[in-house]
Image 1 (cartoon, helix red, strand yellow):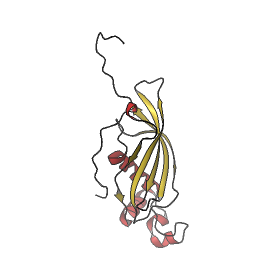
Image 2 (cartoon, rainbow, N blue to C red):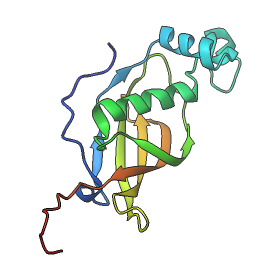
Image 3 (spheres, one colour):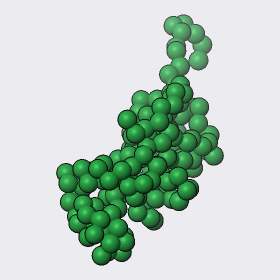
Image 4 (cartoon, helix red, strand yellow):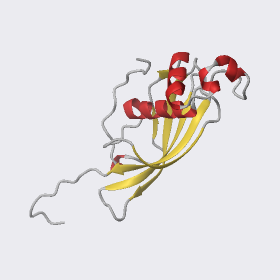
Amino acid sequence: MPDSTQPQPLPLYLDDLAVGDRFTSGEHAMDEAQIKAFATQFDPQPFHLDEAAGRATLFGGLAASGWHTAAITMRLQVTTGLPIAGGIIGAGAEISWPRPTRATDVLHVVSEVLEIQPSRSKPDRGMVTVRSETRNQQGDVLQLSTVRIVVPRRQVAVTPGAAS
């Protein structure tokens, strides 16, 4: 299994988060077989399937699909990087790939909470904006995403007859 194993902290609720909180995931080692398998099934372009074809493009060699990098980013965040209660439920995103992901890259994700907005109409949740950088072992940013996620609030037990 190419992912590193790190114990996942307790799930975090909206009330546990603060602007500026940072999270770093475990790692995932890429290889040529993964790149070609993903591309064959989901993004069958020559520069994702063949080193020589990739050299003839702006990539200068075999490059993973950006969607492959995005899928690995999601796995790393879910398994070791962003311990959100109830899971990572997206409500919108911006994504870019400033550099290609290569077969020799070892990926990890660094995420930072940018904004927290409790919902006015649904008091059991809020929206959190998170900026994530997927980096390789040299620290090069391969993917940059800003995502709005739905995060539940911690449930407060109501005692019958208690004053509110």
